[in-house]
Length: 386
Image (cartoon, rainbow, N blue to C red; front, side, top):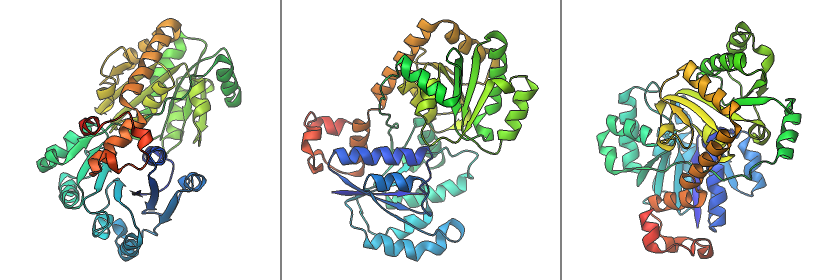
């Protein structure tokens, strides 16, 4: 049994990280994977090679890749697979897939809709997708509701399946100190961090403003930013204007965020638009107490109780700073919140359950899975309830 994963590119963004984890779980179920990248290979290719996962790429020429249509068509006709999961929409790929895996195809949408494309463009995309795919999976109810509002006919075709998150081991004090040393952070610092693109919708201005207020109240506070982007220079200037430039560590892009997460005392995440912000959920998987504000997004669906994290639908800088300071000053409360958040991720982000849900949505049965030992705790009735 083999699943073809069609993706937009093979950089190391959140969508590509998801696909990699999905294929790792497929392997545990005895299911082979193959990747077709609609753009030339990026950094993910080395990780695919290390896992022995077959991968092909396209040149992606012309607007929307249409000049690569026949190349994509020939490539897809040569692939033998039992099911197809496409991450992210692409009209050229919709047309090129022909009858490949017909009846066992699903489209996984990882992105929000508003302020990205006009509604008429989404209507074209989803009306074509409805003819090509058995189901359309959304990473949150927030983006599913956006899509259904634009194309009501999607209501019966869509499914919400939250991202999977493996639970890493909790870091020991020794591990934490080693991580901080590797990043040049003092062992006695109280570290607040975030990771991601430095772009407007990610609201790094809120992070910097909260940092300024926290820094004035907590002398040991230091701030860790992993990522880069077009707003880097502006955010450095904003930090300098608040006199905290020497208390921020700008790590740039990190291929491995383990040391970053191991160094944190608090995760502070802010965004205007996110289908489902992965960074705060990854932090929670590490047991890190999390403070988040998202005005439009799906994160509140998981952070739906104050036991799991501090969540706000508005970017109230004073409120966010107060929440961070409380956690820095009350380490027992921070520990309890971190463990409760980790428990929430264990509840909603089980990678095996996620993978079985996707396979069921694609039209597979429990009996189709090659490694029956890996699913022996399940019965067909349990599988059908996923």
